[in-house]
Picture 1 (tube, rainbow, N blue to C red):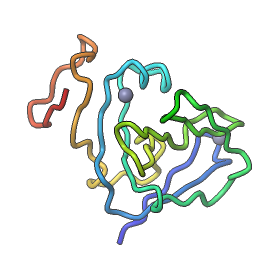
Picture 2: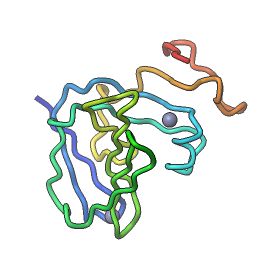
Picture 3: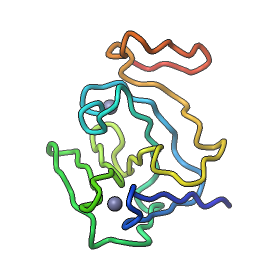
Length: 132
Ligand SMILES: [Zn+2]
Ligand SMILES: [Zn+2]
């Protein structure tokens, strides 16, 4: 059993979860662009009971973006720890792939979503299933 560990940029907040995960998605939607500040975002989907915050719970702040979605982040450095997307991933946490310390093969993105919104400069990877 492999434990995956992640942290915010300043290391005040740390978390971990145990494989397996549900999936890893690359999302091209406008919400993710604005929330993460990049042209697309990669997210690990894990069951909520899998994730354990091991350090810095007191530093976590939450931004509620709508009735089913929120972003929990480090109040010191602003890095996202995990998101909730109750519409698409109820019962799960959505963890930024870039926050992970130990990249493993199991964390390779498996699907892409909101591809019609994909930035024109991103080439479609033919070997990845596409859901739009
Ligand atoms: Zn931090
Ligand atoms: Zn998105």
